[in-house]
Each structure stands twice: as C-alpha cells, then as structure tokens.
Length: 204
Image 1: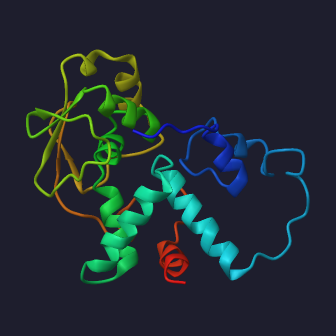
Image 2: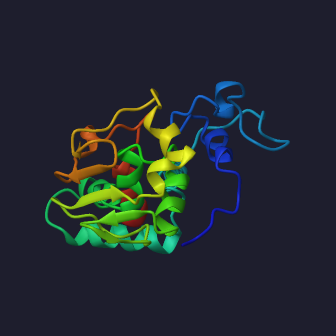
C-alpha cells in the first residue's frame, strides 16, 4: 500500500474545490491555493493544464493512488469495449477501498484503505488486505467482528453528508453486495469530475 506523503486537504486548496465534500475542508474557509503564492491571480489555463488538473483531481479523489497504478487502470479501461472515460470510472469504483468507502464502513477513502490493509474487511467471506483489489458484480463485502465495534466505523455510518449509492446494496449495517458497475452520472461525486479530459491527457 502506498502512503500519502502530503496533507490530504492540500489537494482541496490546490484545486479550489471540496473534493470529498467534507465539512472540515479548508476550502470552506480559504478558497485560494496553499503556500505563500496561493493568493496570486491565476492566468488562463492551457488545454494541457486542464487535462492535468482533471487527472490530479480524479487520482486524488480515489485516495491519491500512485501514478503507476492510475496509468495501469487507464490502460485497462482503454482496452475494454465502449467509452474509455466511463470504463475508467467503473474500474476505479470497483476498487475494494472505494467500495468500503461507498458502503459507509469508513468516513474517508484514506480510512477505508487503512481498514482494508489492517485485515478488517472480508470479500465473499474471505479476509482481504489489498485495497486495489477489484470487486466484481455480485461480490459480498463485509466487516470483520472487531471492525463492527471500531469508533471510526460507527462514526462513518452516522455521517449525514453522503448516502450509499444504488450500486452498493446494504444487508444490515455490516455487509453489502456490489450489484453493478456504475456509470459516471451514477457516482455521487461532491464535485464535477471530467474523465474525458483524463483520457485526452493520456492520449497525447
């Protein structure tokens, strides 16, 4: 598992958006970028700049996955039939850490990755500690017995800031079934994501 080396909310300020829709995001108070030059007036962004920004935002949202892993996911999406941008979103939503986050087993994607890596998550009754594991349609993801009592999990389940999407079907409070691979418009992003620009970035 790769570890995020910078403060996660710095991405919010760099993008000027509340990427994860969290109430304690610094963007809610300071909409300018981080650092001593954050308040400088920004010029018009080039096409490359827009594409890079879209990639960094999408990559950051999914827990700041490594560039190597993200590029490999894009390559797989481009080989699948259909729209590459839709395929990319579908593959990212199938990551185990993201399914755990969508199921409200964790308050943030970073907490979801930690819960997975510590062996608290089961897929079809078998423990799995690989956050990037692909969850297939029909797979059942559940919490381990210790995780059910964790304050982090209890907090996540009480959060009113986000709902469980339709493609993650709850069975009680500790188990879900991944029912289908979602399309872009079905994914509950707090901000606008532009995977088409990510495709353009890698297609250069």
